[in-house]
Amino acid sequence: MSALGRPQTRAGRAFMFVSAFSGEGVSTVAREYARCEAAFAKRPVWLIDADLAQPSQMQAVTEDAGRFGPPGNLAGASPDGSAFFRLAPPARDAAGQDIPDHKYLVARPFLDNRLWVTRFRVRNLSPGQRPKLNDQSSYWTALRQHAQTIIVDVPALDRSAAALQLAPQMDGVILVLSEDEGDIQARIDLKSDIEQVGGNLMGFVYNRARSPRLARRPMGRFAAL
Image 1 (tube, rainbow, N blue to C red):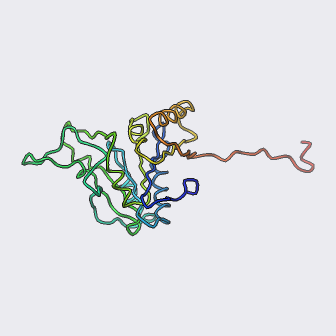
Image 2 (tube, one colour; image 1 turned 180 degrees about the horizontal axis):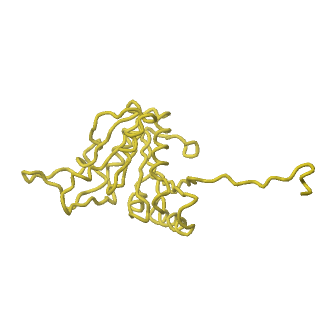
């Protein structure tokens, strides 16, 4: 939080957290960053679960009431009727009328309305229907007017290319690297790919780092043993 600084304008900022490999802890890091940010924010913080295939953030936050408090009522997650995704084919109700894409994204407030967490309603999809990310969307601009910080949790690159589509729409991208997962070259490639699509790489989180063990120097009479 200190390294990323504070917003300098009225509009909020959008940060995306991503990793090269699944299991590196991106969702946990994004969730904890959102929780800490909400404790100091003057306006709401939004945690956007951009994993539209396997959304899990809202459930994880709901099950951790000791840290996030009880959940509020379910609400819409779009301030202007826009969405950062589209459904293909488009959704229609029983009467054949189009259902707006943003209806498939909902949110709950936590921490006395200081933190909002979204969930894509994947179970409401019809057979053969899939969400696709938009290369450009007014959603992020609209949400910045209501949020101090937007934290976007996307699937790892080994599962989805969502990070490369969303990176140019963010104010900053933070890579999460786990000490025990994957190889260095894949992380370097991800960094390069994000920069090539126009993403603003702001730093790294080194997750699950182990403290180095320092060799102890023998002391006293044991030095000669």
